[in-house]
Length: 130
Image 1 (cartoon, rainbow, N blue to C red):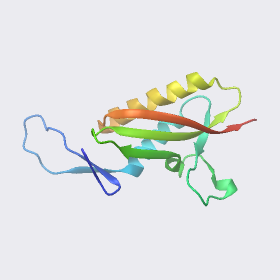
Image 2 (image 1 turned 90 degrees about the horizontal axis):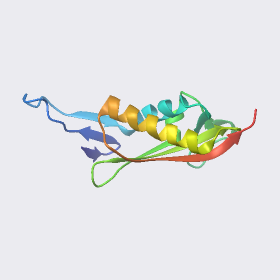
Image 3 (image 1 turned 60 degrees about the horizontal axis):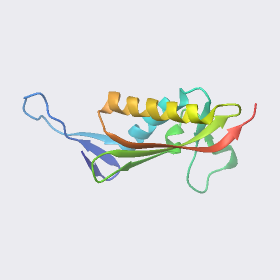
């Protein structure tokens, strides 16, 4: 696996067959899969947009741009570090929610892309009181 621009290149064996080409996955795809897995966890209200210049109304993201609440980094050992910025619902037990997000995101990335995960870090950026 290698990082090329903002894309990951997957290089896997093909079960004894001749290699047919290269598969590249955009970081946005990894981020979107991570965000969708996180949004399925009870207690996660939304993803929190990171970076400057965001409008007040745009900082809490549901599905269309939810990947903006995820930072993807390829480490030297070809494993991924994922930082997820979430908006938590009030009354949620944070340790349980955080551990569940970590597990579900790592499972989703492994199942869909076969990529190794070094870290899934969950940052609670805001709490929503209903």
